[in-house]
Structure formats: structure tokens, C-alpha cells
Length: 263
Length: 311
Image (cartoon, rainbow over all chains, first blue to last red; front, side):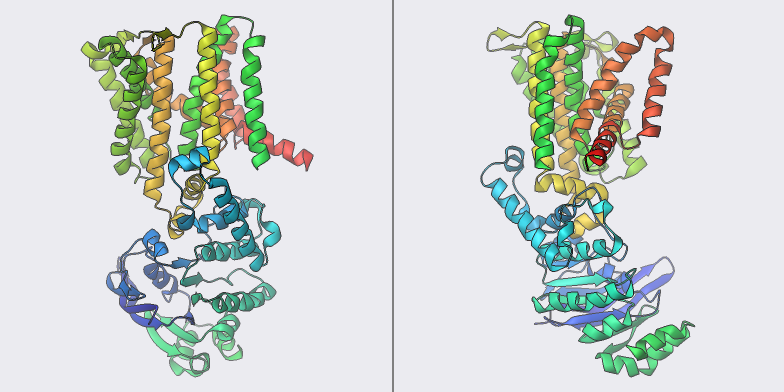
């Protein structure tokens, strides 16, 4: 069954049609990329799918259930998680506690159990902490478990957000520009990270500017331009698509095209 | 983390135990009791302000409702004081629940305005309903009497207040280190990120608001029985500001900071009486100096210094 089906999705901000009638479907096990020039509406699309904005038009169906307009906590309960381009780190928690918050829906305890540390509370917390530390190790930031999140370098925070999202054991993980702000070698390492997550059975939607990363990991690519879908297909097909090349050329920067061709 | 927490708790217990032995007279014991009551309110308020990141400029209102519930129910209606105290706490919990739901949707300055308004309304009602509350003159409160045993004398009151403070600190620390406390802190630093992780932020903000209101009400009830008298003075806007100042001064998101903030700002005005009419100016200068040189508050800044030297 299709995991995520988006039909005719639209969002209008006062006078600006940020996303316009976009439809696509993501199958289980896919790494589905969304690309497009700056301002194409990629992040808005992501915010619509993850319940941060309510769409002005269209529907979002997750595993057969209409989830259009549901709020983020409701979507989290249905197995959807995401990271943020501009980071939403809990800066007053330690790194490992950030990841433990990712498991919030499994960790919730009664008020009095928390107050008096009753009935296996300690054991549950220990198990949760161990699981969170293990996730951090998988993402190559294991040694930072006890660091205050506020003191971590940018690249590590990007991975911390991925670990936190994975702690919720999502079916569908949406990554919002995970390579943005990383140096080239850090960005290259992301290829294995993303593939590893997909191999563990998590379906991925990847919004990204970094073409080498997109071309290396994606099974299919959706191209947005001025809020509209202008192409969709396998990486090779997208690389040769005239409309896509025109969209990137139209922005006035040839670099985008070169990245598209070289990757 | 765990060791720092238990270390702090032990240190607090030690200080509370030793205090009555070294305080020279009853007057100081009286101040120590006030410190404990204020600290109980501040530890609760810190959950809301320091951890969950939501401001309240109306908590003196909850303190006052607790105080007046005890005064009216145990005085006018001769209820057993414990029952009056519980009824007051319950009523405040309900009020906080009902009022908190709509106003906690507001953020920043707007939330400050709404809670300020709430505090002012409570203060006005308590002042103007003079047939029930005695109006600006206040009313007397019977002594705290539990099953025929009456609590009296500064010593006994001190042990009650200190015991309550220690209990509240331990429970607050437990809560902060639990999934609930992590949810508070997550909301306080990145609300959108918290929501995406499945945290229903409205629910947790309301929880922090109600907990802090109930602690304020309990402290208010006890303070009323201890003083034997209540006036609208401790219910008003200035006391609300004082409470927030204690939390910020001691250090936001630090439970021991809230205790230290309450202690310093309760004791300082007593010490500054040597400055006579300039007292309030010196008080203001101390506050300004601390916030300029220790913007994170007293305890987190000092803990950071010690930690850096040790590491």
C-alpha cells in the first residue's frame, strides 16, 4: 500500500501561491527526494505534509488514512517524524535527553509515577537512555551523549535531530535539507547515513539542495518550481529533463545545472 | 546529573537542619520561615517560567486565594484548617485549569498581560468583597490545628516549612528528570520541535501552570495560618513581580536557583534596613548588578564557574 499519498495540495499565503496543486505518492521503503530552486516551495510542501501549516487545498493520506490538517502531535502518533532545516534543538537539554524526547510517545508515564519514581520508573528511564545513546552511536555522535546540546557543533546537531526523529520509530521520516550548512566531507557521509536509515525499514522523504546526495540515494525525485510540480522520475531521467534544466537556468545560476549534470 | 541532584538535595537538607541552631533569635527564625514559603512558590513558578518557558505575572493571586480560602473557611466557617487548605488548593487548581486553557495559547508579552490581568482581578475581588474578606483591613486566621493538635511557636513552624520545602524540591527534581519534565524543557526551548515529537504542548503548559498555582495556594494557606492574619497586600501585582524576580535572580531552569533566589530576596530587604530610606535604591542596585554580571542568574552562573574550575 502507498505510504504517503498527496493529492492537489496547495497553500496560499496572502497573495502568494507557495504550493500549487502538487500531487505525488511515496511507496514503502523508498527514498523520495524533493528538489527545486530556492523559493520553489519545498519547505512549505514539507510543512503542509507534517501538519505545521494547514493546506488551503488538497489532501494528505498516510497509510490509507486521511490526515489532512492534523496537528504535528497527531501525526507523530501515526508514525511520521521529521527534522528541520533551521534546527529545532532543545538547547536546555543534554544531547541524549534530546533523543529521549523523540521517544516521548512511548515514554509517557503517569504524573505520580514521575513524581515518586514508582513502579519500574527507573528501569524504564534507564532503558530509554540506553536506546537513545545507541541511536546516537549509530549516527556517529555517540561520544557526545552527555554533552549539553547548546554546546554541540552544527554538524553534530544536524545528526542529533535525525537521531531524535528516529527515536520515535517512524514509518515515514522527512528530512529537511540535512546537508545544508555541512562541509563537503560531512555531506558525503550523509549518503551512508540516509541509506542506513532506509535499510532499517524507514521510508524517507528528502528535501535537499545538495545534488550529489540526492542523486546518490534517491529512488525517485520530484522537482518543484514556483510551487508546482514540473517533473517526477528516476534520477537519470530528472538529470536529462529539459523542463528541469530550464527551471534551474531560469534562476540565473548555472551552478545548479552543473551540479545536476555532474552528480 | 543524578549525583549533582542528590548532592544539592543533601546540601539543602543540611542547611535547613543547621539553620535553627545557628540563628541567634526568633526574629531570624521568622525570616527563615518566610524564606521557605516563598521558596515553595518559586520552585513551582520555576517549573512554569524556567522550564516550560511560560511567564506568569499573576501568581500572587493564587497565593492570595490559598491564604483567603484558609482564612475564610477555617475562620468564618470553622472548617478544620487542613480541609480548608485542601479546598483552597483544589479551587485554585480548578481556576488555573479553566483560565489557563485559553490564556496559555498566548505567547510572550501577551501571556504576561493576561496573567497580570488575572492577578489584578483576584486582588481586586479580595479587596472589595469586604463582607467576606475584611477588605483592605484584612482578616484574622485561626491557628493551624490538626486533629486537636495546634501548631505554635516559631520552632515548630520552621520544621513544618523546612520539611515542606525539602519535599517540594525533591518532587520537583523528580518531575524535571522525568518524561514530563523533559516535555516542559523541550517546549521551553523549541515548541515546534516538541510538537513534532508528539508532545501536546498545550497540555503540558497547562500542567505546569496548575502545579505552580497549587504550590502557590498551599504556601499561601500556610503563610496565613502562620501569620494569623491576611491582608490584600501580599496578593497584589507587586508580590507577583517579586516572585518572578526571585526565580530570575536565582536562575531560571534551576530548582536550587529558585530556592536561593527566594532566600536572597527575602533576606536582603531585612539586611538593607541599615540604609534606612535608601534601602529600596540599594535593593534595586543589587538586582541590576546581578542581572548585568550574571544574566543567567545566581546559581547557574556560580555552578558554571565552579564546574569550569573543576574541569
